[in-house]
Amino acid sequence: MCQLLGMNCNTPTDIVFSFEGFRRRGGLTDHHVDGFGIGFFEQKGVRLFHDDKPSAQSPVADLIKAYQIKSENVIAHIRKATSGRTSLANTHPFVREMWGHYWMFAHNGHLQGFHPPGGQYYRPVGDTDSERAFCHILEQLRQRFDQRPDDDTLFQAVAGLVAEIRRHGLFNFILSDGLVMFAHASTLLHYIVRQAPFGEARLLDDDVTIDFSAVTTPNDRVAVIATLPLTENEIWHQLACDELVMFRDGLIEKRDCPANPRYMSAEEGLAAARAAGTAV
Amino acid sequence: MCQLLGMNCNTPTDIVFSFEGFRRRGGLTDHHVDGFGIGFFEQKGVRLFHDDKPSAQSPVADLIKAYQIKSENVIAHIRKATSGRTSLANTHPFVREMWGHYWMFAHNGHLQGFHPPGGQYYRPVGDTDSERAFCHILEQLRQRFDQRPDDDTLFQAVAGLVAEIRRHGLFNFILSDGLVMFAHASTLLHYIVRQAPFGEARLLDDDVTIDFSAVTTPNDRVAVIATLPLTENEIWHQLACDELVMFRDGLIEKRDCPANPRYMSAEEGLAAARAAGTAV
Image (cartoon, rainbow over all chains, first blue to last red; front, side, top):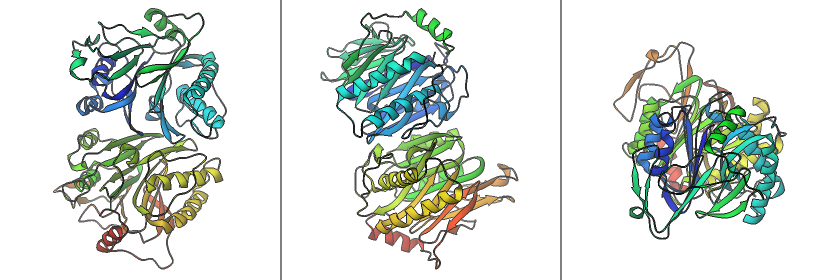
């Protein structure tokens, strides 16, 4: 499968440390070599970078490192193509405007037989199941609400839509409007919340250590979400299969977890992705 | 005023030569130092770069040069801020999806008292008159047509909307859906169509000459649109005040020109922009 990375914070934070580990899975420490995409919210604006080069070698990824963009919400996706054309229109994350805010979405998995009717407000441009699912979620929310509802109503609505869509297959995704960040796991999705007292972290994919206490203030709180943990000396939490969470300001604000949660091992998750015809 | 650059071609073409001259007006040969944006269509996909650094010195602009992205439709905008915050959400070009295609828009000018009611399909994210005008055009088109109409119907509809909007002030803009490119002049907008036999061109803003015959095939056709001509030894054509044109495959396919066309000199155009409170 492809891999997902998300960050939700209470203060603009640069994602370079996490992204440096993550991008090495695109061609160096793993084989997700069919391009990548990363999107940053900057206040209400959105900055998107896509490249069809492997992220480990991409000059676009080098630029991201050099620029050290600070953002409260970031979504990234590295791709191992299975079927379907690799084209810019099919590259995650996808972006649309709803209720006067941009919404951003990246998906890893595979939805079978998922062909919702053409939307009134939102239509896919490319031909992926992922963009169809994103447009379907927005379409249903927009049909139901003319303005952004409160977080509780919004979360319940998203949870209901996700429960329908995941019947079609693997639906690991990250979704954000720049205010909150939704994360849903069908198979593998992990997260960590970093806050004071900050310590040191070592990347799994590179010989790099960072001392977060030197680059943060005591009030900072940063949630990082990734398909698989990015560091070797921190405790990452796993989302259960079919669990949906909503982060705000670096904390989980809402959670919809099955009554009897099941957690997949990395091996099971990779096997499930293979069985679903998704690249691993 | 800010400056606009557009390119519409019958074959994917790199815009580096034109962009290199254009970007120097962002801090070197002119004073449009408040950032820039450039968007490329790649088939149905869109690649956007924004930077708040002056385009002449921007590492993002360097990356664009290094990448030599080939595209059939490109829109760029360099900015001299007048009023209003410089923020990513207010940076041109703007993008929305309509009828299953992305639409891209950049504006130079100033619309006074232009506050159309909030759209059903399209709402601004930032707070510029430009994004309001873009959303208004899409909103009206989408309300009228559920699918993309033929070029003639589309052009007439856009022409009608533009005639209303320009009553509010200066409305130089470039708009594209990746298939066609609209250009409208209130004051200054020039274009050139390059086709066989190709010759040499020298940039006005830099000591750079290109021999197009060495980098093209005899079938290539490339229209370049810019606020002011970019080269010194080619003949650029000027759009009349209130003229709207639609390019397809590097040629003007539709044209809506006043019965008694009036052409502004560069000096008049700059004076009009100053009078309207737009940066020059």
